[in-house]
Length: 236
Image 1: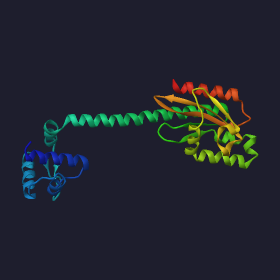
Image 2: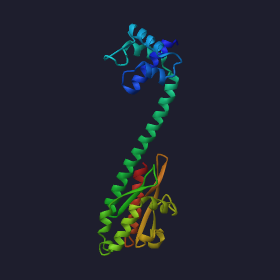
Image 3: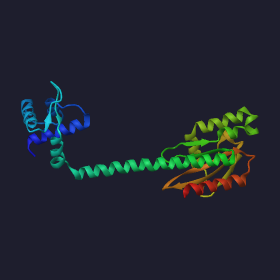
Image 4: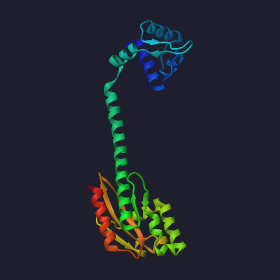
């Protein structure tokens, strides 16, 4: 590839990246040509005479023409490198897309669990050390919390610090079937008036926790069965 082609390549690349007309000084500095500015200007004048670039406005830089793009596409692209970059970008986008799909499934699962049990339902998210929850207002209507502002505020505090909540969940022996941690068994000092029913989920090679929190006066059999049922729906 001769120098004029290198100049054309630089102009096309720069214009693709910036959408701004490209001047000779920009080409010289940004692409490290070891020639004088006058030489670059002469090359650009030749390229303009060939119909490869044009000057859109007075005193502006140059932009590629369709002919310039055609030469760039036919003769100057590194398709092997571009393929590697495309594969890398696609892998990143695919991973993000899969995480977003899992998040949608988790939201639906937690929503179903909260509606079915009238407890605060939660799930940990696949891409960070946090949890989200639904049904919070329902659990606070229970007498244990409606009649005790202290109990209610302690539950609120736990969910506001969801990263700490996840750390505590990680320290519990949670398996593939729903398990109840009753009162002091749940290892969360602020909510030892509560019980937690929780299970580990595994969706598209992503693991996390799904469960509910409510007063120790809860329907354990129903809640544990419901958590298992929602987990099965989630993992289908």
